[in-house]
Length: 326
Ligand code: NCD
Image (tube, rainbow, N blue to C red; front, side, top):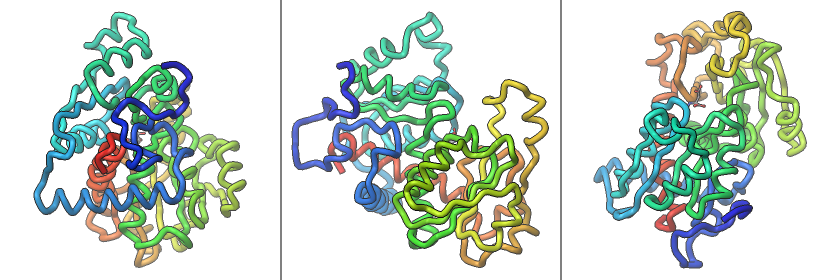
């Protein structure tokens, strides 16, 4: 099936399932409305209660997920596997594409068309921007993007949103500061876009060469959201409700000398946290490579491992919704 945009895929016929998710691809946060986000948040809450109470269910028994990763991953790949298994489904894990026919030169469309013969849904991480849209055009089963190069990481943004809500109990009215590699960080690209749905003030904190792409900044401003830019965390630390820190994306640099020049630009320390609000959330998509000092981990505002856990609940919610079982 070519050029189907985000058309409904082959997962069943019931018209009563959630129209935004059932049988749909998840390739960009642009596709979500505020109602969609409320819906996923509610299902994620149910998944959290379910996991804490009984650990697992057989909601997706008999369903199979193909987990196709062309780039390294710890959290995203493991959480999709755990999510599928806790819902009673099973997984085809392809995490070293060097051991698959990709190393023989097989194209992405052929790999996708093969995997959908076995699986009901495909999770894809790929180094090229737009790869998940390409996969979605060829697939008759739902494609869920797990990150496409420097493009987007929609499921991470959903779990980030869920974490902000869980930590602070609100979204409207907040000041969210994003810190680090805003140029190459796909989690930031998706999160900034997603937060346009709320009355949120955004500050972008980055050195000159790692600034948020101008077009994306414009998208946020066009949505009527207040936007500020600075190079210094000190400018936002006292006022922000959320500090979202990111790693400098070494693998995206052509000139490693440039990476070396900016890699240690930010470090959140206990001293800096002493200047932050009493109620706020310090977040990071992880992995961290020096941006948050380990001494901050015991601070109750350090939310990054709760953020990891939330990834499980949000991905359970997404799999159930896409497969029409939420
Ligand atoms: C992020 C990614 O892969 O974009 N990791 C993740 O999925 N949690 C962030 C990063 O690699 O820096």
